[in-house]
Image (tube, rainbow, N blue to C red; front, side, top):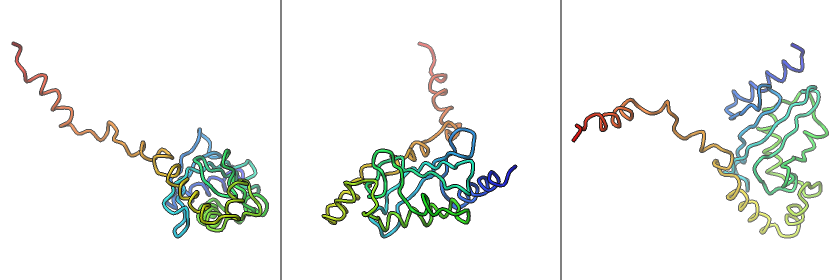
Amino acid sequence: MSSPSKRRDMDLMKLMMSDYKVEIINDGMQEFFVEFHGPKDSLYQGGVWKVRVELPDAYPYKSPSIGFVNKIFHPNVDEMSGSVCLDVINQTWSPMFDLVNVFEVFLPQLLLYPNASDPLNGDAAALMMRDRATYEERVKEYCEKYAKPEDIGAVQEESSSDDELSEDDYASSDDAIAGQPDP
């Protein structure tokens, strides 16, 4: 195994061990979704997003591609594609950084301190600079509308499966049928 692929595997395992829910896409470890919660004491607190991560072959020497899957209202996130405009990921990435840094430091900082002077979402940036109160309401509205656990598929994962049915559940329906004599 070459060094970049060992590092990629190690960083992904480290992210999974840091209590992030990670859903691998296909069989490789280069594309996956991560469940990301809005930072405390921010407009995004309580929101849950599915973030798509793509690791290039040259990772960690080349930065990961990060994008929000469900909608978020933010000057530095493209509303349609979910692409993130973040200098540390797009321009100043270093192999010293890892995936845990992205989810514990870089994305929370992005949400806490939006940069309206370098927008991917011009409407959000203009609103933030022109009318802060309305901007904050729109952020909260988007969180309420698009960033609940069910918006990322979390509820479906928690629903009961066949394994959770007890033998009593099976027996009761069989007994009702078998216990009745023919007329």
